[in-house]
Image (tube, rainbow, N blue to C red):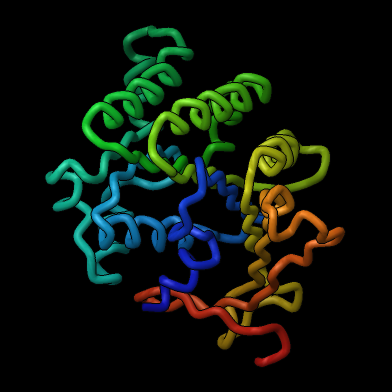
Length: 246
């Protein structure tokens, strides 16, 4: 499967203690294909996953999944995949005049509830930077992400993915993306082609492994080089290409 190359680059198959991954969309490039590949991976592996989204609806993920030969709704019914709609919960919160902090607490409670039923609970927060649009402060969002990582660590070798936007250097989104990158073991950057649109290539994909510098096999490596690819999107997945091959 074309999506397998993405999950391999994210090192999801490795037994890493709380594998923290940050997916950065540079200047508006759409990196949702990475989230879709990871959802597909979890369904095929029957690996419990909590999707927290302020970006896409569950119907969107399901429709993409059908093209990738999996059924998200069935996995949700089976209790393997749980979905928390942060946008819908925000609207309900406003209508009920509840405290904004309650939403963050509810997300953490969802993680703990899944952990009572599963040894491992993986987490994807799709659109974490949208919390800044909802008037949460940078400090609140950063603290919230740290709490997610801390609770996730109670599981057996889970992964946590934060999918965020990285726009301009003086923007709060950029600051949050950097803060999350400092927590990450793997950082994925998705960027449009500088030359514009192409029928052969969808964009640039750069993968960095800052967490590897603490591994024994890399302890004497001074400058760890990132992996750079071109990528092409298809209905059923993504294909990675070496730079200069197109």
